[in-house]
Length: 263
Ligand SMILES: NC(=O)CCC(=O)C(=O)O
Image (cartoon, rainbow, N blue to C red):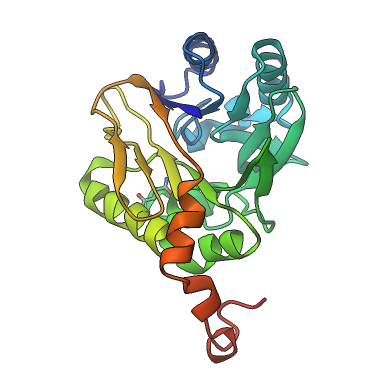
């Protein structure tokens, strides 16, 4: 299955430009026969947190229409990265996922807010999991800082996800953490990790290096440090092979984990 990773150059507060660019890249991915496309975190606004009152997508209406129209017209699954939304007067960092028939299959707001980038001052956290299916692909989706919480990704894997999508705005100074954490999440959960980071222009400091990692931990693709659309062929049957080679799920001892992961 071909996956389109949209490592997009997000303009700070340039909402209309960002929708336009996202549309071009989604259309290009579809023309290259991607079955699933993935966008980065907060691609509508960038980290323009102080301007959310003006810029956030009211009730997610624009983003939902945008993603629904494109997924149904192009017949492509879209993991819609995340967008800054305003719901009932509060701001969220929200992922919408649409299947290739234009149906909303999941809506998730980032549950772990990243204090180092002041998310806790401006945003509300979500409280729900993000498990969904795109055709045969059983998946989960998380947003950026969420990957530092292994129990959260494990919860998605235990709930049946074989593929974990990650949308991010992960800054360059900690890019080594990004790579190591993603690889660890793939190995420990024996699942695919498909992670899309952004690129920035001058003021901010994001340099891509998106990744696709297979369940044995092998890195299938690493993005460049500039904007790019990558189309990567992925064989999802690898999950069963790895899980039968080392039966981690059968060998777990959840009764010893004292409420860390409950089944
Ligand atoms: N946008 C984010 O959540 C950034 C997370 C990050 O930079 C880190 O965990 O380090």
